[in-house]
Image (cartoon, rainbow, N blue to C red; front, side):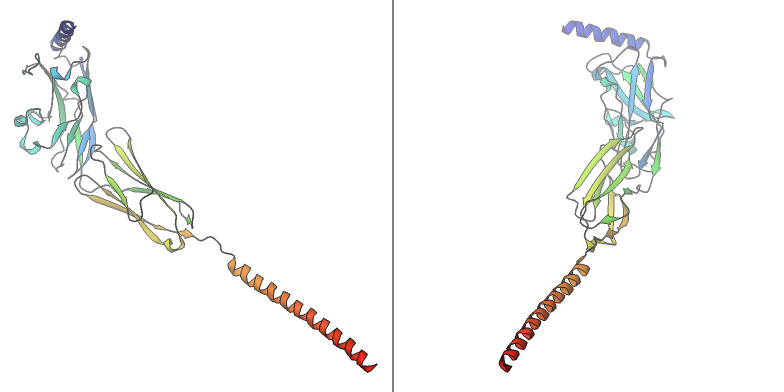
Length: 290
């Protein structure tokens, strides 16, 4: 079985090498552009394929380089071959054997705009000896759109809250670094919070925080703030004013009515008592005259 596997990989590798110079054999899917927040991080989704089929990661080497200079590597498995500006800041997240060439760049700097291209190299042996068989996807490069200010969160909430009833507020923010997602926090009790992370495609992700509160009368006109904290420490808040609708209290009607009815009832009883007393006095008075 081991020999068959080795032979299979050999013939597959041979077929790939023989056709490696043909762009028709290689395909890559890389976003053309993606936002990158200066001081934070970005993850560039990337995948590739070859008509000869998949090879194990041990037979492949992935490199990211500047489009205008294939020797200017921003990522290489050998750190010595990485440009000084990018050393310690880039990492391949995907498995090459699964055709995943996704790249992470951290500590984004204003000059990291690119464009950057992925290059795959084929190796013949398990010890990863370099070869001249390689292909650069220079037609499928990514350019970073540098953002210097963190994006503001988006708040979705009903216009009015009702006193004593659940009130739900949703805070969301778009980002491009799923390996270090933004942290969303509230300026009030956030024990009843649900957090979601969603891939919205093309390298964009959404982090969402759903807050549920039970507002009281004292919360009327209170400011509620959701703050997004991004990798690198940058923060961006968004605020709205809470308006609480009071539940109508009928005590101001019921209590006076009860008091009035009670007073009338007591007065009626008093009148009946006095009438009976008066009638009895009259009867006694007539008897005494006889």
